[in-house]
Length: 175
Image (cartoon, rainbow, N blue to C red):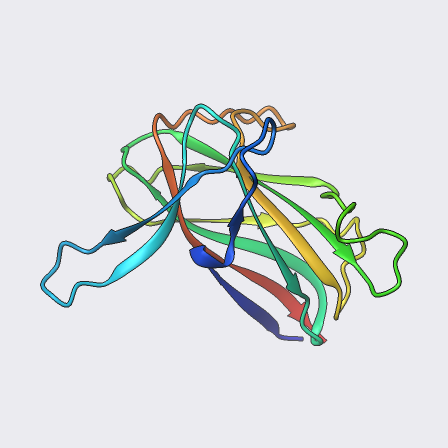
């Protein structure tokens, strides 16, 4: 069995509506300070005072077999601290009783990742997504990602300031 990859750039995520409990981070763009033409990239700025969320909806590829892992690319404008990232996944198969309008995330999965020690240095971490919602090839998958002040396992987010999400990938075992 091989590993399949789904690239998830920052712009593939959508903010929640910013109502109570559905706070959204800010999407902006950062440009390299290098010589022109300098590359520019999108980023979501998750602050340290709110539980902000982004989400995406996608179809699970036909070669999906098992073991979904969400890999995050992020950085901070700080030199120390831990960030707690959480993800919830839900899946809908055609003709399911649940509809896309009433489906919610299943199990909360989290990772506590430490800033690498240099401001704005790329950090990478992985969240193993439990398959309690029986994700299968061809399913419509909804993924919610957020920064959590303290996750259910007791990990505490200690990073002061924004954590910037540049993008992610979903990796899985293929058939």
